[in-house]
Length: 452
Ligand SMILES: [Zn+2]
View (cartoon, protein in one colour):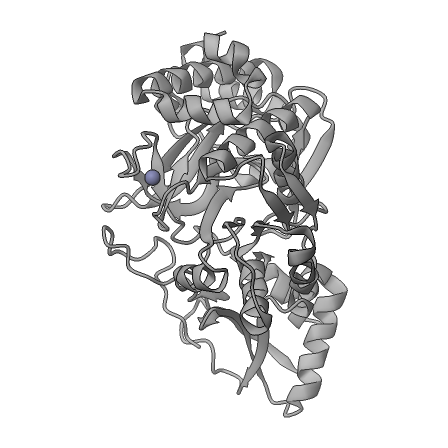
């Protein structure tokens, strides 16, 4: 065991943050490489999935020194969906779920000591982003089957600050309590934070120190507006997921388009990159013991930035996400995929099989346009039938609509209107179209233009 691993878990979040900020890049690279070799051997011994994969591919874990030694071996979301238990190396204490495009959820398992370790790492990340034990925090990340609410809560406990664990409630509930509890930091999904900011703009705001978002990207235009409405509050984002277990990316500095990465607890790679360096983000968890993931394909498109940041932090960075490699869209406060709309619309009478869902922004408001083809003229009735199906099958989505974090529109067209080619793109995302000054190409695999 390397000396850092011996005492890493005993450090306070502030000291973890201090050490990370001070570590020379060569030491970080050495630590990452050591942890990588150790985890490869560990999963080779304890995980049925990796043991079999190594055997089938003739990989000797003892000889794997860097990710490239694994060749074209990756873990894909479908592997976890197919047999999550084959990944488990030690008895878990808790399971979380993450939605997949097939409509089946991925199960991700953790134990108590991992949750405590993740809390410490996330607390250190929040510390680097400017949070302190004196802060008063409203945590509006979702609890329930998904991970972010609880992880953020645990991190806030480690930071030793004052907090309220709201979960993803109606933003009005948090707004009403802002003065009562003197919150100065608010955490939640970007669409939720935007709705809260609309309330504050309309009914009056208080000075805040920080707004921290995660789980989806923040529209760039929202940042200046939020900063103004909340009387100087900084707006920062984290990048994490159920599979990562905590934050991989944090925004400690004034650069809204980049994340600083925790490249000591994760081994990030970008694979199948185009000439501009844009490719799919892949990560290896370096310290997980229950369900470690080796070279897990996130389907998120980004670019790694090896050069040091002007802010002085030395670690690896990546650009904000540029889209997805599959048809999953993180929008309207949830993970949405074509099968969901297929399931909703097939129970509505009089529609053709062709439909398309378009996500866009009007100002900062997120709009979900459901385009359908039919000969029906009773649009009001049609809309309520679609909403009834949505309520019945996907209550989470309806909840997000009810608390006002996005608008839904149903737009009807005559039969044959939507399809121009053999393949009709079902989900189209126009929300974050922007030009990265360093990169001008389109996102891989999402070049098809919208028809609607
Ligand atoms: Zn920076």
